[in-house]
Length: 356
Image (cartoon, rainbow, N blue to C red; front, side, top):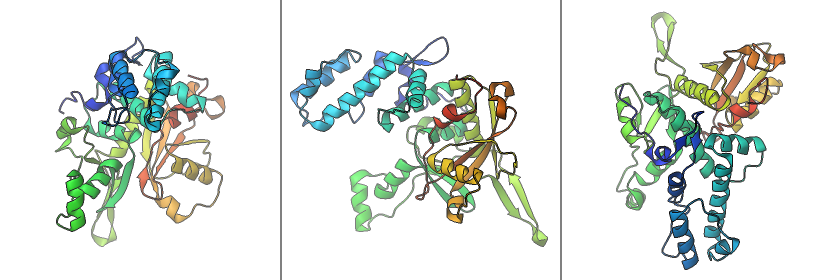
């Protein structure tokens, strides 16, 4: 398969260093790249104090900023954005690595930076642990951990598409404001410039990885109707669910140092079900209700994208009361058909024998 090359170049991975553990160390170059984000970019209306602050941080992004420098920034939103950036920057530098910062922040229960920064960290972490990956399906599945996905059913397939990309194409046909006007006037028909990731186009993923234009097929099985009322079910060889499971295995191993095996399943029939982790808000609530034998209506059940079993390679690394038992995972959409994975749920909620 085609080499991964430098996929997701926008995440700044190449500007990060690795420590002896293989975790990512923030550098001045990485902090400078964060300063180019739209939230911090200078605009024609930027006041002289904001221009001076931005230019000085671009030269020395780790320098301390005096309160009066911030107070001098006239625009309230700009002043808040710089305050948040420095809180994020200082947290990264104090933790020493992106992984340590992420785990400390999530375990604290007091997330004090916006999702945009957390998603940026998650993307960089995934880029690191997939650095040796040449599987486009795994790289595309990993996007689900830091970019919300719209789930649609089409011709018997369950497809995940990048929400922001699909919404943009639906609104502008990919042509910006001109496209929006043409769509509104009826002169242009909506068109989704996306394609389902498959073996014959997987090589194209690497060059277009920052465009997020590929759909991921999350179908469990293909069903073929045969004669005499028989059906034949064939497990998909390149299932996006399997790719997502491989990514989640890497995620757990990288952050916790624990080897696990994760497999997609259709249903939970375990009468001795002991532990579960929802990968998102919706599946967490759904699994909790099912575990407690609370009624779940058909609409909520229909939002379930998949279940997974997670087993520890070494049961001794589990809590004694559940050692050797499978952990069940869930993935579900919200009422709008959007999946928003919370990747912190696995490292925070697995039944570990001791804190990692």
